[in-house]
Length: 201
Ligand code: PRP
Ligand code: MG
Image (cartoon, rainbow, N blue to C red; front, side):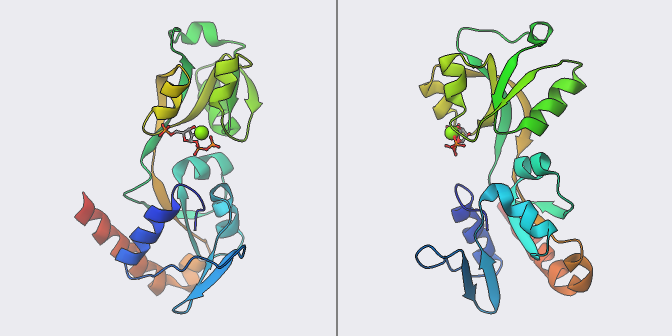
């Protein structure tokens, strides 16, 4: 289970396909319900758990791309929709020609590095762990690359979404061995998820 923003939608989604998630008591990180075991790592670590033996997981496609773990991703889920964008101070226009050598603050160094290197630009990446807008606001970075959902955070910090790098959504992750050894269970889960997704559209 992804702790944080995706948790409620993930629980609702699983409930709709017949899996009731129980949240752990107190500071515990595991819960048990109806024969299932639920783990509650940081959302950013979900692919690491799934690569290393946990059967299935849910997290954002941003996390999957950034962490690049060996997992099977059978489908996108119909929630957690947002985007990763280049964000600039309100009064600046985007010009890729001028971005060579830019300092870019982000939680997503891999996605950022790949995006700019595909454009043939070398940039300096400042890796932060959150509240990235502050780096643009204080001017310690020339731009930031971050998630935009409602746009409220950038607006509140006098920033603007200057260029969308990619759309993001929650995804289902399956362990590569589980996919083979528990094929029927996984297949059934994927079919239920697909039916639910088509109903939502
Ligand atoms: C995320 C993201 C943006 C904000 C976008 O941060 O990094 O800051 O949400 O949402 P909005 O467009 O609806 O305002 P979050 O507060 O989840 O955590 P973090 O900044 O600590 O990473
Ligand atoms: Mg934030």
